[in-house]
Amino acid sequence: MFPQVSPTWNCQAGASVCPCRSQNVLSSTAAFVSAGRSIIDGPLRTPARWRGSLRRDAAGYGTDLERQRYSAGFDWAVGQAITQPDEFPTIESICGLHERVVGGGQLRTGYIVVGDRQLYPHPGFVPTLLSDLLLLHSSRLRVVGPVQAAAELHLDFVSIHPFPDGNGRCARVLVSAELARAGFRSTLFTGVEQHFLRVPTLYIGTLRAYQTGRICRATCVHFLLRGAAERLTHAIAWRRSGRGTAGLGSVRSADKLGLTERSREGGDTFVHHSAWENYLQALSSQERAEAGEQVGRLEAEQVDDQNASRE
Image 1 (tube, one colour):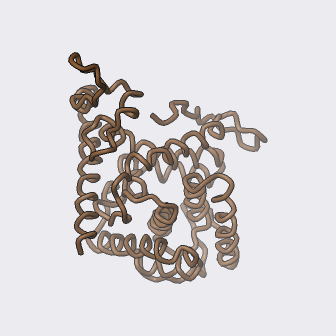
Image 2 (image 1 turned 90 degrees about the horizontal axis):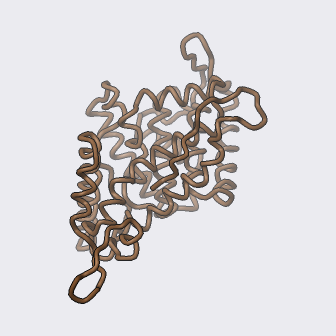
Image 3 (image 1 turned 60 degrees about the horizontal axis):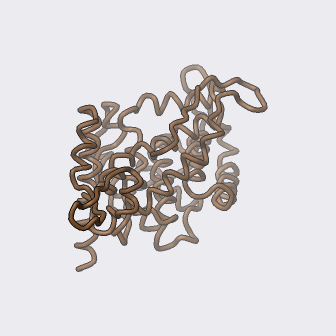
């Protein structure tokens, strides 16, 4: 399971080392997500297409047109990241992404005021800030790996707020494409939009808390990483219980979680297929629903992948 050491969120503004301890668990949380790739992606040979709802739906104000645009923009961006990995992302491709997902595709020329505060940079700095961010992201990929680098990119993009509207949606699709470019396939990874469906207001509140100096950067990045980590937990248990596709419910992986039994006849080890049912019984009704959604998504993605291979 992913690291259970949760930050206390008692951030101290201006401290050289924040006492919240978030920095201590960034790498381990990112490592959990990376390790889940071999278990979750398994047989998927191509990135899964977008399916499901938006964060805006969970918040109560999504529209059909927004869902259609997001779905098309997601599939386009992921395709670009896979087929043209050396040419994506650029400022030009990010503007193209915004045009598809939101509409407009032009960097902002005006200020953005939230409440009575101007939280985001002067519009004249936006092109330079975006260019610098892409260079920094390239360096982070080498230093901290694609998962943490994607979370850092997510935070910095929304903090620059380069477009008049739709910056959050654009940021989440951009990060989705970057994860696909790094080799992730299932939308349990790449569907960043859905990592925060259960907590749409907490997502905005955490970003705003960082932008107004109430929490440290590491705490905000860790929140974004946990969104991905928590999206995987039930699906990993399903795969390891032996209910997943052949080869993924391996004896070695299952044995580590106590999901194997010894045959009385020959002493052979085999995967205990009732483990998934036992796992579900220990969950709350909400967690069982989430587990069912994750498993259903994986099964649908595998069917899509198999159909695509026959075309």
